[in-house]
Length: 325
Image (tube, rainbow, N blue to C red; front, side, top):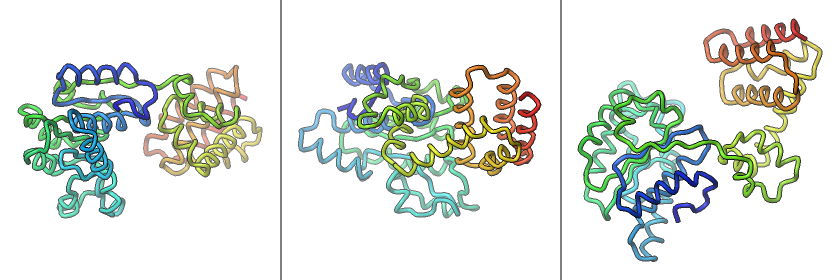
């Protein structure tokens, strides 16, 4: 049950299974690794297993159904949060988070970022002190690095004297950004990118060309691979981005190159994705890349994280490429 639908991460799953079988489940787990590796999926399966453990088949089916709909009182999740002018539909939010969100809209000023605030942790604390229906109660916190200092302090107080049977399952993409006091209070499991062999089961029914492209873009992340495989429109968009990135490196026209770099002018997911395709195309299509080109694109990556004019950065990058052509 714990490994259902999971590819790879056998060592991490074995560690979790050993804790369960030995009765050595700790009060807090921290799953660390790059985005889209399956950390959150494994946390949810872990929580489901704990709540279903020792129950009859009918009870397990009922509990699993309640968990899937985020209706089980002993299964709490902090994922999407109410954000003013960004994410305000409580019905949509309830599909991924089931802690109360009203305090975020009533705050002065209302919550305007996805930072986890002290009121969010207090809402969890109130629920955790209710009488549970079984041996365990689970709280999953996605991307715990979103927590503000006050929220971390509140969580640390809970972890110092956790209610009996309460298990926190946290994920992070940035372990180094977390305070050591929080890391030290959790059992940390590190997740790595999967090999192409481990990802093969997701590639059934795809052509050889599609397979190579999916593996190239996924970069060892099953979440991205599955999303591209199952969404034909998203797959088409990604293929077009890669084609444009490839055209950039093959072009000898500065005007054409600047046109192709237009996605970098605006900050956002589309810009980040196109930058990734530029790097992939450079690596896949050019075996003998000059060190100066590599240094320039790495400098571009760094500078795009600043507040410098992005269009100007793109233009300077194109001119710099011309100098070393």
